[in-house]
Image (cartoon, rainbow, N blue to C red; front, side):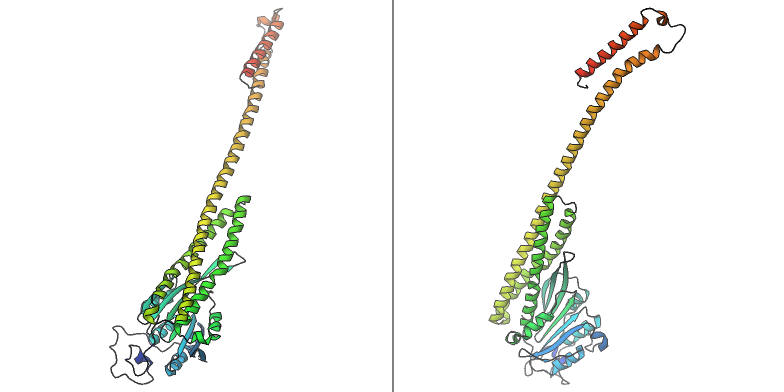
Length: 387
């Protein structure tokens, strides 16, 4: 966790000279290689658009609610043992640079907070912790999981939250902490715990909603619903994102717990963080189970689709076989009937020089020939099971 900031009488840190109220340290630090951003904020009207809420606390009690960053900086300089909690939503570059200059935030962390689309992680830059969290919420109407991104800067006497997206709603976290001054007085570490706890608790409705979706998908798979494959695919993609949001948190919380002794974390706060770590582990395991379940369901669905296709192909083959049998019968009778027609056609030409026309036995012979040919064809087709 972050160490407490050096107070008057101790060796000043490199950012203390910016926060001194008009006093210069005896031994000012070396200036940085590149000039830091100005702590002077931009137009106050523009900054209030993204400053969701800012407050100053002392001993766990809110003592001030400034409306601009400039006012927050000024009042924090005047406070003794105070803590600032600044909440931003999609801040502008000038606002983040203003915060960076005031609280000595690392440029890499500021760049990540400005660009967003970061993976969950925990980085330490000097005395400042930089935490990236992926919050999630379940939307009932479209049955989808919506993800938000939260960046948290935790210093010795400040907490800055930068929110990208609708989730999470930190107003409830602030109310909870203000209703628990004994916990809030533990400092920025306690606020970080509360934020982590809120993000992790927000996963529970998502887990419940996804479980319901999977149960419905299983029913649709075995009932042969045509659109179930698309639903499985879409939910699988959401579970990939959910897994990316939850799995890194396990390592992040274990890293925090590993630093308990080094940074002198309060014992009660240690218990709270261990509880959050347990919840994260449980959620991560559930998400892993969801991905495996969806993979199994997709396999079952593919098997059922294949079986259905095989059944349809078998039915088509059987229909084709029956059709072939009918065609054989029709063709056989057509051939049988063609023989007398051919004979009758030959003797129906009425040419003058056809000896059979004036032969006494011509007619009986032609009838016998027709009967013989038809009978022969009938027995031939019958032997071949065409009739």
